[in-house]
View 1 (cartoon, rainbow, N blue to C red):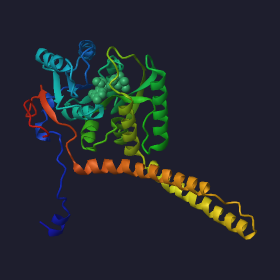
View 2 (cartoon, rainbow, N blue to C red; view 1 turned 90 degrees about the vertical axis):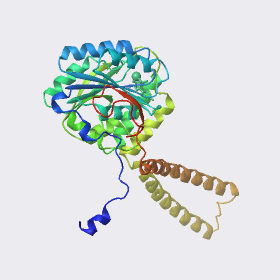
View 3 (cartoon, protein in one colour; view 1 turned 60 degrees about the horizontal axis):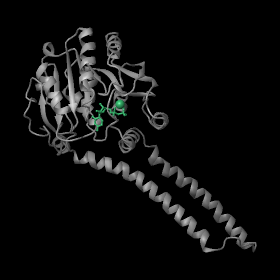
View 4 (cartoon, helix red, strand yellow; view 1 turned 120 degrees about the vertical axis):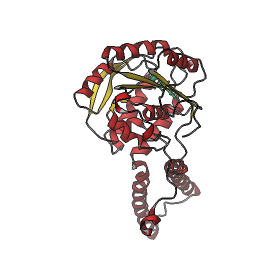
Length: 349
Ligand code: UDP
Ligand code: MG
């Protein structure tokens, strides 16, 4: 081997927490449709969710699998999912060792899903499973990503609606990727898109952004977002803020550039101030006096600097997490996968 080439080979190769390709099912054994459902304490909705999803999938009439990712639930979801798998082998379950968050649960689902078309849907039935039929039609017509656009959101608080709309508009303005407005994670992706997205292993993930980033032929279909079927939201304000920060830092450098813009503005402004102060001083009109002025200006600038330091910190922390290269999630048990991933698994393969 050429020694020069050897030298540039990276020493720390990131181990994917994805299963090696050899473990994927042969094409004739793969289902056509995979539905991924992230589940975090959803015991109230699981029976109805199961009924509605299997109804739709049976109606479509293609071989399917349902991949439930239990994101560290502490309620009866765990035993309910295991029972569903025992009844019907097409229902497969990945149990995380703890709560890793919604976006990571979706990621794991995409790592495990084997279908030619992969659908991501929330467990709470706010996304109507019946829409899968229409998505499937679009996929058959040649689209590789079919995302669902919320035309109307019922049963959500005014605060949630307002913050959601501000979130989508802000993201649209400042990101470099065309992320569709009012589209959540509810979408269908072709296997090729899923395989491409499996290669994106960043820690702080904004899946709908990544799904736009990869490109391919994409189309949106509108739907009415329903009320949560039962239970309460698993996205409290702090998780929403975290997701927003992940979305912005993943797809925009504008927050970092803001400090440059602000610096230029302030430098010009103070240059003007210096000239004015000198002129006034020379003409004998000394209007700049008192400690208060100095103190306020210094404190103001100190505040601004800390804010920008914090912004840099947000990016830095994400770089740090990616450099540590920990696995994105740890699987405690997996049921229903006809390959070495089946339970019991060593953590973090
Ligand atoms: N979820 C998850 N892990 C979490 C939080 C939520 O897997 O840490 C799942 C949850 O079970 C649901 C989906 O993500 O299937 C969306 O959550 P939810 O409906 O509570 O969010 P909202 O619609 O209120 O934004
Ligand atoms: Mg919901």
